[in-house]
Amino acid sequence: MNKDSQLGVEYESMAERHELYAKFGIAAEAAQLFETELSTLLLCLRALEEGWHVVPDGASAKVALDEIDRRTLGWLLRGLKGQVELTEDLEARFSSALKARNRLTHGFYERHNFKIQTDTGRDEMIRDLDQLHAELFNAWQIAGAMTTMISEAILGARANHLPGRMADLCGHHLSGTPSSDAATLEAGQETQSSSKSKLVR
Image (cartoon, rainbow, N blue to C red; front, side, top):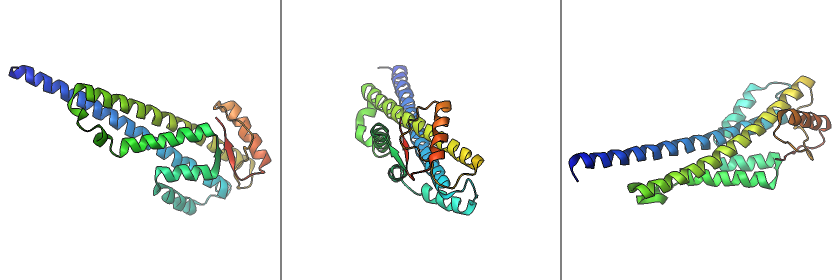
């Protein structure tokens, strides 16, 4: 192989590695967005429970946020399950996303080892990253929809001067459609008979 051909092969290899590294970064972004969304969701639930939407308490909210920010993704998921009743499907999705995040963050390159040295190996690594990203991205989207619904509940409770307790959504099905879910949240706020919410997707 002449020098030019060798350089061409090396350049192609580096280009493929750059794509691999970019895919890893995109998947890592989705993982962080998922974690941030769960943190926001827990803070919203805490605000509704403490009544900060009626009587603002910036100092206590800052303490709560700092505590949440120090926690791991696993802790955030356990905290969420302690605040809302998740369906089996939703709980399984979030648990799977946690495993995906751990696979990505803890030892992705170590597990694939020398695969990065070959075209076939890099292709396999990229497929793995695509799957991890899809799972984390979908979990982030679901968590974001939940945050939106809780935020709407907070705004509705503030407008109606409701007591600082979590809305009772037990028995209601949230479809993900803003108009129908807004009606569901309003109905849940009117009952206020339970301190644990049920989110059904």
